[in-house]
Length: 147
Image (cartoon, rainbow, N blue to C red; front, side, top):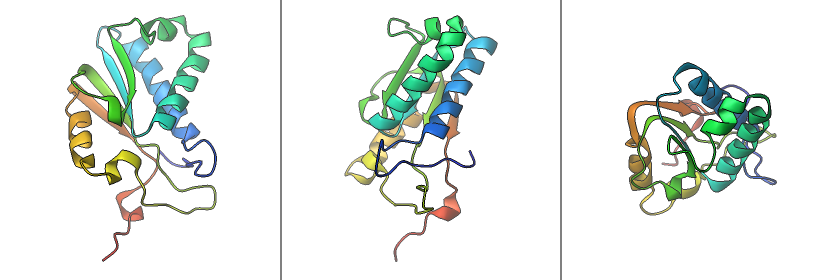
């Protein structure tokens, strides 16, 4: 998604990306409510930002609010570190990390940079039974690896 900004020094989230993820959740509920939905964020801060955006949209769309309730077996919203064994028909995966408001991109991707990060990512992408949608604000060319 274009124009996403990672709030590095503040909330440590990407609110623009979170708003897109919440909108995609609303579209899911309106178009395919019989399919379960999981949202996985790369960080706790991004998961919190998505939750906030879902709550905002849920005030106008009671179907979203009901679908995304804590007691719904059709839905989960979790950070990457907390996804184990939960499968859903559709997964929305929110990276959250992006350039900051000064245009700088850090190569710190939270739990992915830690030992075993590749296993966490593998678990996340295998949670989808039918479809996974990746929502991100950076392109592969933005990442310059150190030689």
